[in-house]
Image (cartoon, rainbow, N blue to C red; front, top):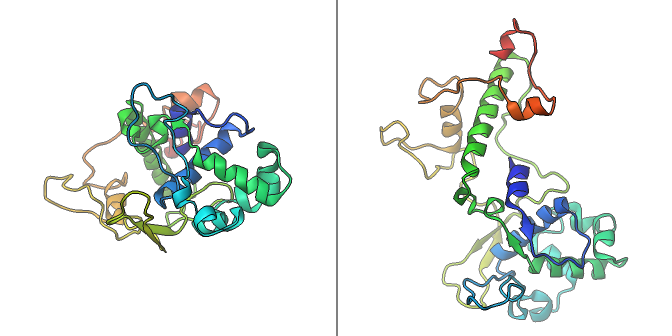
Length: 268
């Protein structure tokens, strides 16, 4: 799901002086988002029609850069934002930054990486929270829901394993949650938000989701209640998929994840 958003959305106008692959570019853009949430990366809300694209882009202004305002080193800046321990892009800089940023010193490598994070460039809608503007957004999520239902049915049949424990863990090189929550109340201009360690509300199993009334009963749902509601075994689910065995995209690549035996119940 995530890689499809990245591939379709695209990302351009980044600093071509650095040898950053498209895959790593996605990780860096996610890191840029965390710097933006904490107030370090600032992006213009509007640009006049005659403003060159190179000037209508994000940056880390000196007024909010702790390396300027607090004398932090590049490493201290990355550690302060939570990025250093979030992904091995920075903690294992010699493996991930040296080639891309043509450097052999940690401070130099981190400095060039921070410069790269500050100049975000431009990402397509599908790579951002504006993804619903792209028509492709909608069939992708229906497809993901259909696959999830198939996975849950196969797990019930014992034909696959599926860990449905609520929560998540960080993979080594995929930026996820920095464990920083920022309050922007009353923030103006180049002021910074108040950031504390914690998790954003809405992610826990018993947090109430903002969408409701799917059955016209004025009902509300927690995350786990909604997950139960969309179970393929739910009697309340108001829809059903016509097939769980026809996947043209997988067939075209010779990929399958169910039995090819017509008599096998796991295909139903």
